[in-house]
Image (cartoon, rainbow, N blue to C red; front, side, top):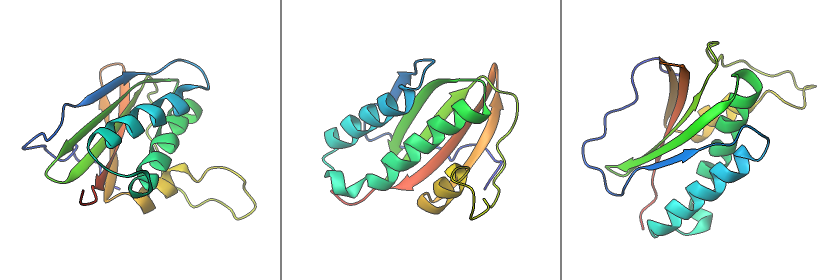
Length: 139
């Protein structure tokens, strides 16, 4: 995990995606739907981005469970990489912790770390955002 700023984007290949998230349990599904549609517009096939969709769900769910509520999802693609950011209103910063084998939950950030090239978080006005970067497969 890195606490530095989100990696800079030099050349944007597609228009960035920005989705306002509802303040209810439908937010992860809406986020997945929007990211899926954007990746299909890039010409990717569904089997090429399962990891990105899983990480999308985990980031949004984590904002609900450990933030105060997710506000929005942002996605950018540049230089063969995709960056997801989930903004929430919480002040507590995320902590990566190893879950007990007996726990049925608390694996979200462990999954995000395993699936992404890098991940991190930043404080921002009104809360924070948690981000993850993924290598895009060849089209």
